[in-house]
Image 1 (cartoon, rainbow, N blue to C red):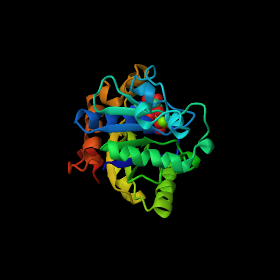
Image 2: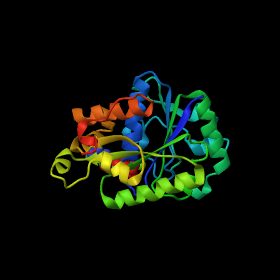
Image 3: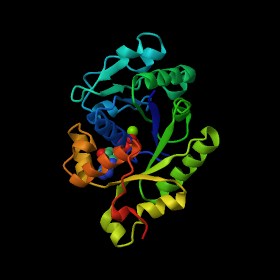
Image 4: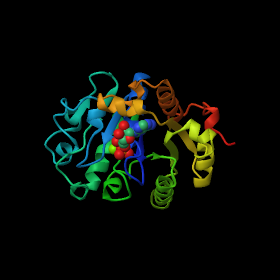
Amino acid sequence: MGKAYLFLSGKGGTGKTTVAASIGLKLARDGRRTVLVDADVGLRCADILLNMENDIVYDASDVLEDRSVVEEALTACPAENNLYLLSAPQMMNPSDVDKKAMNGVIRDLKTRFDYVLIDCPAGIGRGLRNVWSEADEAVIVSTPDDASLRDAERLSKLLFDKKQLRAQLLLNRTDRFLILFREERRPADIAAALDLPLLAAIPDSNDVYRALLAHKTALECDSRRVRRAIRLAADRLSGADIPLPKYCRPR
Ligand SMILES: Nc1ncnc2c1ncn2[C@@H]1O[C@H](COP(=O)(O)OP(=O)(O)O)[C@@H](O)[C@H]1O
Ligand SMILES: [Mg+2]
């Protein structure tokens, strides 16, 4: 039986889709059967990052409304054997999704895959509540600024209060030089202030955006630092006891 991981954030645009798709690709390359569930109903974009936008025939709404079975709605990633995508419906609102049926789909996916990575919409609305019941773990993706961190803190409290889920923090778009000049706090210090375990820190790099323009994940971008950080994040998510780089640790 596999596990389901929520990738979520309080604030929008923190990098949930980038991180979930990139970690998913790394896990699949390591031979783990992995499915990325695009749960951003109405605003899907994981298919673009995985360069699969022309391959999608069915999406989650077809399963929820009995027009197809799960096997049909899963799109195999042409570039990677062990990676599948369950696309989000584009013409639906989160409030139209049958929560019970959606959780049934996630339960089903856990029997077929080792890793079910759920790319959530931002915030604590219905879109998140549609998918969180079957989740085993949660990764809050935040940028290192206070606006994003305050929302991350609220979200982690809500997850714990409502679902007893203790999230890990993934800091995205960290900047080693700003940390060196003490303009940005160290990832470990930020995580400690939020009372969350730190999963990983992914450096800010234009190469991540350039990869997006070319319909590629951050694991395939030109920055070695970013690629290394994504690989480390995936390894740590799957339980490997590998320390984070020095700049992430407490001062
Ligand atoms: N580490 C990073 N460095 C630079 N740009 C990034 C990084 N991570 C994400 N981005 C960019 O930020 C934007 C939002 O990312 P996205 O993954 O779509 O966020 P979300 O899913 O949280 O809305 C995209 O343009 C993406 O390329
Ligand atoms: Mg997204």
